Length: 383
Ligand code: SF4
Image (cartoon, rainbow, N blue to C red; front, side):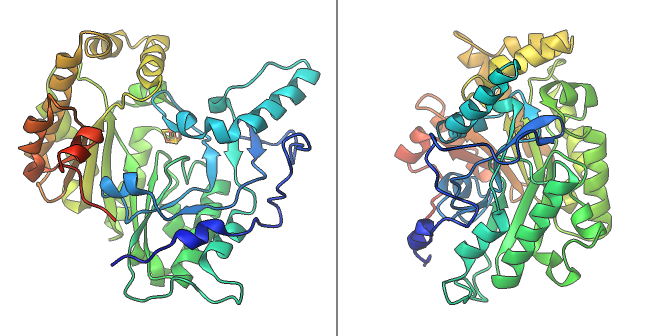
């Protein structure tokens, strides 16, 4: 039986979360940049932990708890869906930044061109984890649920963010019995352990993984701007595995294969991430949300990766539903050959016309998502 965590979403703001109205709002630390992007510290932040992240629990990434120290990432991936989720909350602050830039004669910036952080993230977390008398609220030693970080930003995009992530993790590790799953497109994640940022006694409660939807550094740098080369992410993963730490795979998002050889694609990528040393392997084709496909296609053209662009155009847009479905099924079937069913977690949104095929493949590792899956009781049951 899960505890009811509703009450802790009503915590009071931290000292740096001033609760100012937007009219009064002035950007703290104007001129600050991170990896070349201007930084906005969103002042009305109240939480870094969300305790009802059912969508991520359905994907089996966590037990409904997610950790988000920021709203907008240092990296800029063409397929990123975060703007659609956060723009309502962050629009006033982006507007304030742009108004300031306007006075200096500078061009306006979009959501993906800024970094948005949450002030005093460790203080916010402390308020969520402890009551007013300083007692830990979630100290049950049998409660070893998994927290997932992050659903909005990369938690290891640079050393400053990695240190923030370490501080947040250490607070969780000291005051709960929870486990923490961290995902990154950086090659710095292993330094949490290598640089002793997380004490040895807690390391068995962390599960670390890297997004590797392609092994081609050129493709990755075209569609995942600012991220580490895939080859460097794999070095970081291998260091963790060689040292005996817990890891997971994330073959995501994977594009349509130019040569149509999905078996070869899956075999090579599964060898690269060493499936036998990963606790689980998630995989997914590129997501259809917002402008993700159009932006990814544009990024491939900009990088002059015309074969990859052609393969993507062949499955996207009106009248291509069958081609899209074939691309996803071919990707899944190839992964099912190389990842044991008990480890594979292939994420698939379904509709009425595809539900039956995917339902038959749940035993091989397909996880069915979306309204059609819920209506047919094919989704992972959570809560
Ligand atoms: S690393 Fe993740 S959160 Fe950051 S831009 Fe890429 S997809 Fe978005």
